[in-house]
Length: 177
Picture 1 (tube, rainbow, N blue to C red):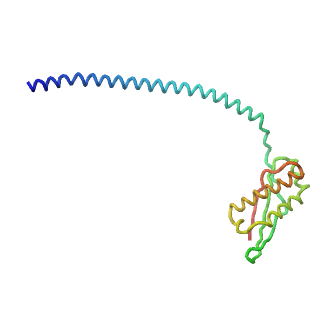
Picture 2 (cartoon, rainbow, N blue to C red):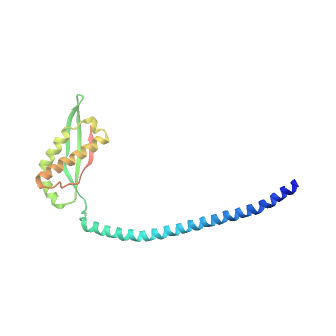
Picture 3 (cartoon, rainbow, N blue to C red):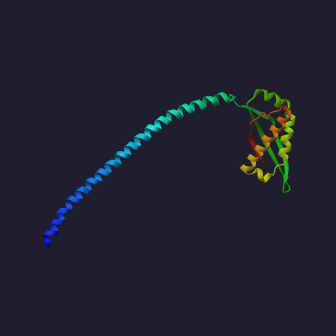
């Protein structure tokens, strides 16, 4: 009898596992269906929003083009003659030679540069004379000097012509000895 109960129990177990397998298969199919619907809805919404974004991007680009003035090509104006200055470091005489080129975009500023060149050169000489030789040995020191030169020249031009006039000061050659 015990054997019959065990066999009967086994026989009863087969239908339960078959029923539970069917339930898991149905749940898996429902999950796959939900995932598929979710992906389809997401793709539909993204495609619709891309069209809206393209329209919005085109409108913004048109507004920017209307508002932004046309950028003129760069004009490079070398400050001639080159700057040469000397200073004393630990009892030794040191020299610096600097080739400076100005970058601007307005042809009208070229005439102002030529007219006010003595004031511009004076501002540069005064700036160069106050430099520390050790600081100029580093890239950071050279960049700081370039930025200071830009500010000095823009200040002179602002005072003389009412606008900064130049965009960049470029050191095309620098010799420290």
